[in-house]
Length: 212
Length: 219
Image 1 (cartoon, rainbow over the protein chains, first blue to last red):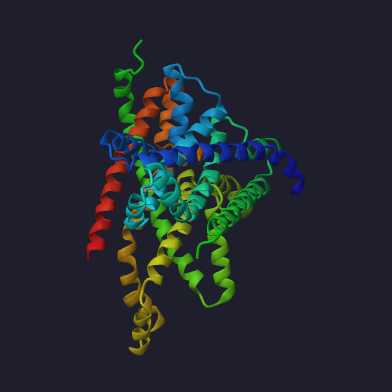
Image 2 (cartoon, each protein chain N blue to C red):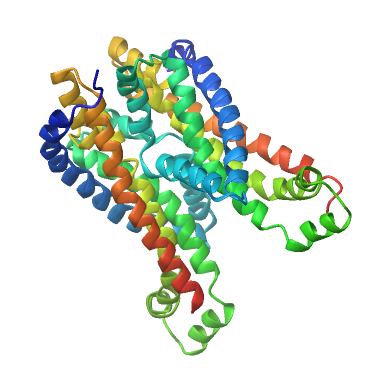
């Protein structure tokens, strides 16, 4: 069974790459959009809400296919990896923005008022007072979302990217050892998800240093 | 150059609508299974018999952290080889969705059951209710209504995962769009319509769930 591993693990690099790049893009979008949804300007709030609802309301696989097959009709032809990162990142960002928004809203109003009373600039208020506290609330939810993202990367095998799932399908065609291949794949994904869970716990402890 | 071809879009719309029935059927079949599997796993996890509760926990963790796509492949391609039970593509798809979301729903059930005050359990014992009656008459009727909105959210999430069934040859909306696309060499319209249909169904549903949640919170 284990002699199948090297061939399968050839796809590990692509899976990890997509998870890392997708989550970086997703984090940036999540913070920008989460803050935009709390903006005092209604057009900003509206645009951010549209982005979130479109990406949360339609399916990730449909978004992936749309970017891969339909975007070229507009003259935009992206390489497969870019499509994967873009679709995963934008999807992740839309879900993540809700985490950012609700965590910021969970910080008591008094914190904002105190920062204003102490003459903090709006940026300092956000950066020094609100976000460090909100961050602590966000971490567990982001951890869950990261695992969703990792699971989502398996879909890129359907737009010809050679990730773990793709190598699995390829190997199945050449060897026909279906049961072993899919069992191994499930175990590999489980180990990757476990690694994410551990890192998020570590991050949580790090963020909680100096707080009760 | 006109990019969007309305004539073509209108021509393919009926086929996509027809495929929507398969999508909706798969969603409800999967969700029905998920409701049952979720409850079994939630009860298993609460069992006082340690190996059973550990096993349930392990199953939940494992299924939750592995991709639905691979699980579907496993059920559709590997399960018949391993057990001799061969499922149709639709059955395999519904089972995959049901298992995957059953693990999510088990957590929802657990939250609902944990929210029941201890006094309810003690009162049921004091009134000499059997274990079955305690569950069916006292605990579940109180535990389930507050978690209905959360379940609604998972129903919507599951609906959006049904395009994955196209990979095991279920001809639902996405698969239909792909077939149309490869037939006419036009992917823009069919895929855009599919995305719009998902949005059109899931957005109002999520607004409804939010309303339901607000109303439940008011009580």
